[in-house]
Image 1 (cartoon, rainbow, N blue to C red):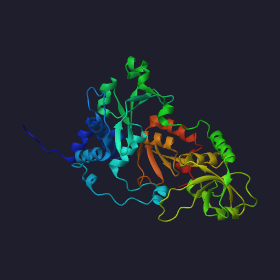
Image 2 (cartoon, one colour):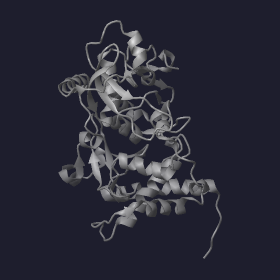
Image 3 (cartoon, rainbow, N blue to C red):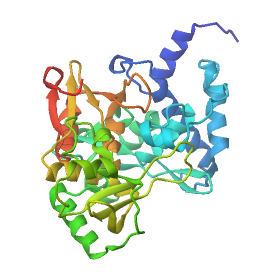
Image 4 (tube, helix red, strand yellow):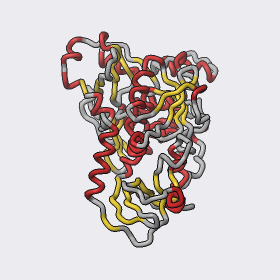
Length: 382
């Protein structure tokens, strides 16, 4: 048996070929896509307990991630380096987790895209292969825990990558698969329960909150209020102001509810609490709790009602710049189809490169949030 030595770049090139990653479409080193493919392949192989792939058992997270590290560390030794200390809760809420474990981060992205699922207590399973038809597209998303290299033989059609999402031309799918409903999941079920009419949803949320108002603690003023009209800046971060500052701006008591949150404190460990509040000029009078998962969408809804939209900026080369966090469903779409080219990971501003064939889908989702799409020359954020 003969063996030969190849360079690191040659080894990476072979890995890309074996995993169906088109390096010409990747604008940064394709490290994250390689990790994603090795996670898919490794979890599927570890979890599969019988052939032909009918029985699966959950795999503990460290068994999965350590296996991927062992396979990839010869080419990327930093995968085995100890991680820096995780940021505080305050830092994560302000600007995201900026020093995450890279393998864990990709694992969580694949969970968000619904390729994987965490069943309980750190145990994971690959999800079944499903086909998702995005609106007004001839291409079909392929979601599930199988490796990309295996999907072509499973589906009988050429499967490609765009960002972390796999897709296939609808016309290339065999007729039996096209007609078999068990292969298909609706786009709405995959993406999540985002309202079609954001203004109506926001107004409904306010109406329900009015019915649930309860008296607040007396003289409570240590909180922030979201007030889109208070700042010229279109960044949502600067639209949160302390209640004392709001009372200086308002001439007469407000007639409607405000979205409020607890003040962030240094070394804070408790999660931020949100509520709709009825306020006087001096204090919080009544309140109704708001679920944390609804907050980001409510911010865009309140922006819409106040006619104070945020912006997304298009740069040349298909790069979109976002300076406010997105709700989970829109973030899922961006994670799926975009390549993160941000200067600092998971820290605003976010920059994603979007292939031209998916830009209209991204634009439609962002416009549904009331976000104004502008070219870099038009932006008042930069």
